[in-house]
Image (cartoon, rainbow, N blue to C red):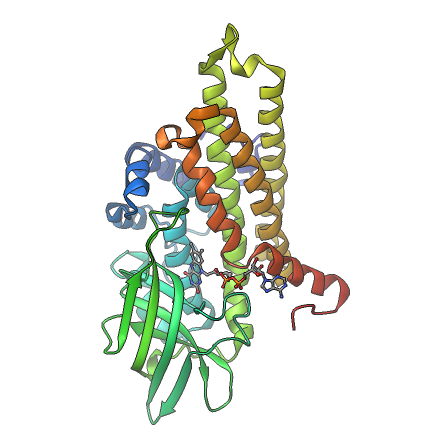
Length: 390
Ligand code: FAD
């Protein structure tokens, strides 16, 4: 098992031998099969569906769940899985973040034992792709109070009406978790909605400049009827939705470190091959400064996400812990990808050297799963006891 150049303090040495082997296998697959194809898919704005099943075979949707995990593993290991994916391609990492984190995470955290047994194995094997529908055209950051999609119970069925926006994987998902307000008690509840249900439509959002390979959809729900057995049995209010987001925000923080690392590795390679003024540009002091600042950002961020994951295993991780990690690591990522792109000069604005893709993709990661501002307010509330956003 080789430490990555960006893992300067050797955090991966915390992993068990079994975890290191699983990570090496994933890295080999990503290097040989995924790295060569992603720029082309990004350029065309299409998703490389051929990666879905091989990633399942490597366990990337299985590791986190009691029903499917191939061996006991740590949250730090699962974080490194997100990092490895993102340092090759943020879109593939986001696909997995939606499938494994948001969709399977919702079922695991808020589903009944029966629901977990029914859905998680099929999703872990990649047989079924999931999506997570919380955001709406008129409610993004204000997802709790501003949610307009309604759920009305009649006997053993629920009828859903409303619309969703930005829903990742939803152009091709088999099931989408829809969060809707129960008209009877006003609380947010979750529903496992098969996407072939009458009244459900999903339309691809075109023209993105970031995460072009991941597909996002606008969803319309018109009298969509879902049986009570598809209501997530332990999702009683938005507090339960927030439990899912706490976990996925930590995952996104790891992906942010991976994106910064991917850009940094490309920059290091370029700094030794590109010659100006008679020597590799890496021999110029100001270019070294860009590399060293980038490595500092990555190293600080990695230390943070390692600790946040350890806190999950210890049972001490709270919303504000993952919110601080998300806002801090994505800010450092944004600086880092800009410095690394700068190091390429003009060649940094084409897809040829990967760095332009990391640079563009960083913008979506910076804004999704809670913007910088909203995560700041979550931490601010924890520090002061005052919620500034209600
Ligand atoms: P808004 O909430 O309209 O915010 C606009 C700006 O105002 C932001 O800068 C925000 O920080 C600021 N702002 C808002 N309120 C405050 C306040 N009180 N104080 C200070 N500043 C404030 N959602 C899903 O449900 N499922 C998905 O799979 C999914 N995938 C996504 C994938 C991509 C590529 C993107 C771009 C988004 C995705 N989202 C998804 C939605 C994402 O979570 C939202 O975009 C995000 O929460 C921000 O909401 P918004 O875009 O509506 O911005």
